[in-house]
Length: 137
Image (tube, rainbow, N blue to C red; front, side, top):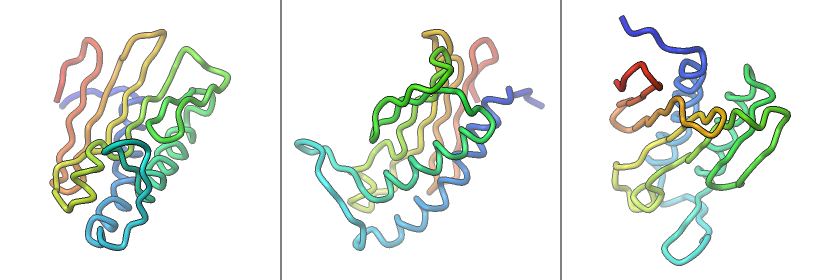
């Protein structure tokens, strides 16, 4: 049995909760609201909703941690040494085209060093994670 940190446990629970919206919206991709951030760079209503869920879930137990998120940018909280890094849907273009190759990505940076990271593919229900000095799974 692998021992995981409380931070990684929080990341897992947040990704699993957020994945419900992704799965639902992927089934109805033709109804999504899409806006353009730049050339070939899109953001969907799902990206924003997943980002909101992730921030809410990660904040529940680590209220003071800061955030760096693809959609809203940087949020400085009291603890600027610990930063959640979020990409709510890595592979938005695939998501938009109904191609089931995208993921929810979360990392934790502590004192300018990534100490844990998670990639969750909600369609295949596959999760990959790693922690500093504890390996990757």
